[in-house]
Length: 277
Length: 335
Image 1 (cartoon, rainbow over the protein chains, first blue to last red):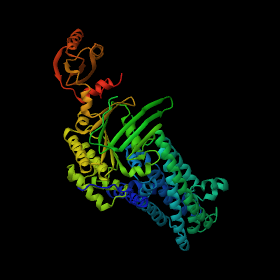
Image 2 (cartoon, chains in turn cyan, blue):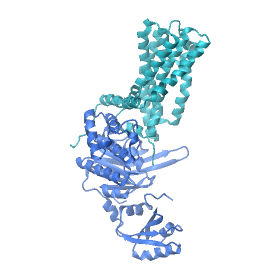
Image 3 (cartoon, chains in turn orange, purple):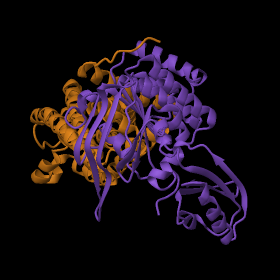
Image 4 (cartoon, rainbow over the protein chains, first blue to last red):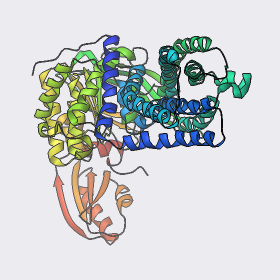
């Protein structure tokens, strides 16, 4: 074997390769552990469909069934952000993988984006299955003209959500169990505040406005306005899409700053290592 | 403090340098000084060992040098780069492998996991796969290349971890107890590969922490002995062993009975004493100032009602030098 010279690759190259490499275990896991089909698709679908049945039983307006189905689909992405992205550093610290990320020349952003992209297939499948099955079972109709703009809003929402996920992940660099509790505590309130199963304007201007900090709130409301006729307007869909678009760079920049800051704090306080002596 | 320079190392270019390096851990109730005023110089191309009992500060030193921890005060440079201010540039030049490491994802196969880590360094995929296959073959792991990681034995797993550390060709490789809990054969393979890897390029440097004195003696060009966060001795294994050349080293085997270690240590002329239990008997290692101390030792043992089942005088080892400097053996807990 020849004597190797030290090579320093460009940050962009390392970033792109990291995304692909970190996505790989997620793709392989979906391929090799088929149980996700049951746990990640069947169970969440039951939850969303149960909510539809509640509305049906209460003789709620027809579009409410659509709210639930769309909310159930978006929930898949939110849970992915919360547990498979933000909280992943907690697992990685536990088995020593976080140390190896830190001492390599890669960036946390690359690792986190890789995690997100790697699980995109299974999450999209889960969301798609809820949307398709719910729509077919309960005869929900959508406005065809709103489809393309809704897809655009959906993509913006996803981008903003994953940038928020990176911001949350920075907490896991420094905090351990505390951040875990935070994720736990955030799940149900945000499910509620985002109006996953009802229109956001039911929360009122102040609560709805505060909830709008989570991109899912505005994104979901805009998509509903575009696809489900008769959706009560919280903020016009165009404005909501614009606000979500603004959230993308804001969360991305904040995440970058927070990841750097938390890394330095964690190095100072010894929170990156699994053991010390 | 004993200090000698390794004759073959290129001390004009230091691979690792620390200046008054100190690390204090803060907990809610107290401050713990894990490292204090550590000055260290490791030349390029050296295999340098860091020895010390549990809690001595070895791992803290390594974690600072690999940029996982910030020093509380002092400075540290690796490959000429400051670990605090230049850590981003430094990270592509270093590697770390720890004993018993469980890092990575069990769902992946050996080759896949190694490829994944290679990408975090920006390696070309084809070149990475070629390098991985070469290293797997050298470590006798070719047959396990397509095996899922969850199915690996601890020896195989540690060899895989070593491949991960070597494949990116770091300028400085940190090995933190790399052979801990490995069987004799796997440990030998790991040591042999480390040596071979260093021979390939004389500018490669390895910093090794180990509990195994024989390993340090066999592998290291120089060692530093760390105790309570300070370096208490530094030099070649031979030089350290020479520091106990004038002593008489005696191994004493006693059947189980009343504890006598403290009594033996209290005898005038006993420089150091350590004990380990093995196969149901206590094996004492005593360092005596001269042969005349031995009768006093025997009187003390008999006075404690202990039966001597073996007595051997032998050549000093690195372990003896360690016991003399630290006051206890590597495995013995601090009183």
